Image 1 (tube, one colour):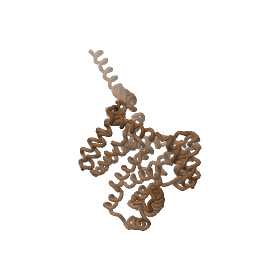
Image 2: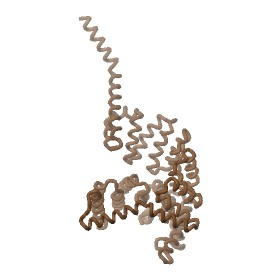
Image 3: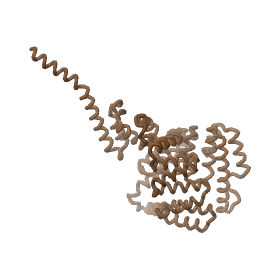
Image 4: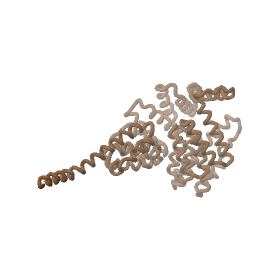
Length: 440
């Protein structure tokens, strides 16, 4: 009996000694399995991968670096930038000497239009280890807040680390164009054309630089070449041919999704015009489901949300559109308006900067920039932005007048009108006035 009790006691003691480690080992193994499952589906279905990660015990998961990195990446893919920032905050706290910890968080700030925070994190990452992509991303941030000289320096640093990085050279050329150094802009665009001779955007950019330099023949030659390389031109001819086939009753299946999407968009646009915004949103949702790759349904939904004064929803819709096509001016302009209307002027400024970056010769973004800066009490910068608006508007007016043959342009201000608008801006605007101006 004593022998039996002794053995039982030993078993009990051993059980107590190993119980906790075995439990912890089991949790770790379970977490590893969840990470493995989530990782396998993360690219095809980030939403499902996130649901798999949600099954992990929170405290245990948040202590695991692999969990944080995977969750952060999934949240970024789903445009949930603020949630990603929270995850990356935890990672940075544990890896303060790891440059990628800061660059990951910087990217989440950058995509969330928190430009100052993004620049600070990219700078910290560069201090720890200079990497070409961090210079490139910091340069892009600086462009969006009109720090053009600093941006050029960053693009140049990126090119020193990776000389064949043509995107950096192209972006530097665009920045030279923004500050009026058209010769250097043309040179950068020419170098890019040597590497990518079929890119229409390069010929358009260099043509604009040549035009600004007064070299009309070179500009015309580049514009012609851009037309020949323009994929959109081929797409428009394809669409026209398909429309004709539809009329003849010969439409084929490969493009039927496009046709259905257009039907939903037309229906939604008509409902918007009649004031049926809820019905319009249902049509835009159907359009996005029918042809999920197209950005138009999301942009139109964003416009409907603005009309409903649901600015957060508008931001989400335009963000989806922009994440699918980061050269979509409609998505950026719409999101900038939504930010302005919800009085989030700092984020609005970042989007306005991107729009100016895409085409600095359109007047309205410069005007919106002045308004946003004034609301942020950056009076000196606001005055400079408005002066730029007047300069660009005059150029725009002259170009429009030449094309139309008329003496004035209704879309650009005359001198008296510009002076009147300047007085309005710097005498102080109320929120309603601002909303009226930015939603024009």
